[in-house]
Length: 388
Image (cartoon, rainbow, N blue to C red; front, side):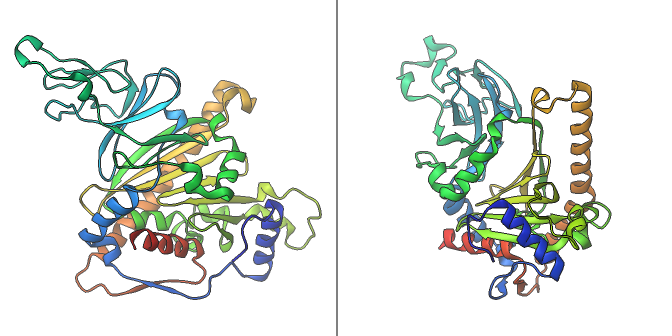
C-alpha cells in the first residue's frame, strides 16, 4: 500500500506498473469478520449511536439546496430530519417533527418552502426553526413559544456537500474529521461549482456495510459487471492511499492499455484512471476522467440491520462551464445517469440482496477479506475503531 499524499501523476504511474506486472496494492494479512456484522440488532444499534450519532456523514450535495428556502427531508439512522437553505445562504437541519404532538412538518422529499406546518393541527414554523403560529391560541393556553421551536441538529456545509452529525447538541467539525490530506483533496475539486444533475435514493433489503463494501471494491468488477464496468475498468489493479479514517484509490481504465508497451514520459495520464475516495463512515466519491463525480452514500435503517438507504448523486459541470448547448448537455448527462441506474438495478442490487440473505442464514460462518481488498480493510478497521 502506498504512502499518503503522493503526486497524482506518480500514483497513476504506480497503477500502470501494477497493470504491467499483474499486481495491485496489498495489506499485510487477510482480515476475518463474521455475519453478525450485518445482521445483529445490537451491533446495528451501536453503529447508529457510536458512529452516526458522533461523526459527520454526507446528507446532501449543496446543489440539492441551490436557493434560499430549498429543503430536503431524510430518514437518518437516529432521527427523521428536514434540511433547509436559509435566507442568508447558510444551511440548517431540524427534526421533522412538530413540537405539539410530533406530526411531520414536511412530507415531501424535497421542494421549496417559506413556512413549515404540520398537517395535524397546523402549527407552523419559520425556516430558521422558530415557532410562528399556534392555531386556536385563545383556547390552547399560554406558553413560551420561544422554547418550542424545531429541534436543531448539527450540520455543516463544506466542499459542496452538506454534512450532519445525527445527534442533537453534538459538535461538528468537518475539516477536522476529514483530516488535512482529504480536506485538501476535496477542496481542490471545486465541487461547490458543480451542478447536481440528478440525485435519487433507494431503500434496499441490504445492510449498509454490505452496500458500502461493494462500492469501494475493485476486485469484483470482472465478475459482477462483465458487460458494463468491466469493459472500461481493469479488475484487481489499484493504488491506494490510507489517510487513516479515509482513503483514496486509483483504478486503471482500459484506455491506459496504450501505454503498456510505451513510456508515457511527461504525458498527463489523468484521462486513463478513475480516482475513488472513501469518506468514512459511509460515502464513496468517484472522480471520472472528464471531471464529473458520482457520489454514493449508504445509510443504516433506523431499526432493521437488514435494510439501508442508498443515495446516488451525479455532480457535473454547469451548462456554461461545459461549453455544450443545453440540449446536448442534458442528453449527455441523462444518458450517463441511465447507465448508472441500469448497473445498480440490474447488477449491484440483485447481487447484494442475495448476499444479505446468505449472511442471514442460521449457520453462516466466518468470512474473510483479502490482502488485495485494501479499502475494504480500511473501512472495517475504522468502523471497529469507532465502535470500540
